Length: 118
Image 1: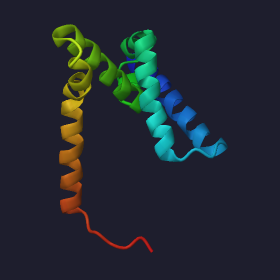
Image 2: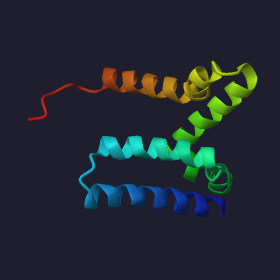
Image 3: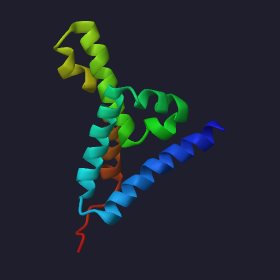
Image 4: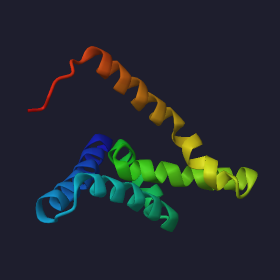
């Protein structure tokens, strides 16, 4: 049943993003940025943590989950070392995912072939 809820919640997040793409003039970059900011706001309000615990990867993998991860990292770092944690906590919490995305991007660039889009 966990897989079903992960699929439903993750799918709903994707459907909302697709509706923004189809019915607004927002660019995909603005929608993605909005998702990260929404994850931070929902985490600050206390709504996203129960959703992430309920839906698992369906809520923690999308960009809303990245915003939630950044917010939780900031909260933990501020508790641990005060105000400077507000600047370092988010990147510390997300360092593994950021590093993995960079490593996979470099690997894809080395394997893939560059060409003109025209």
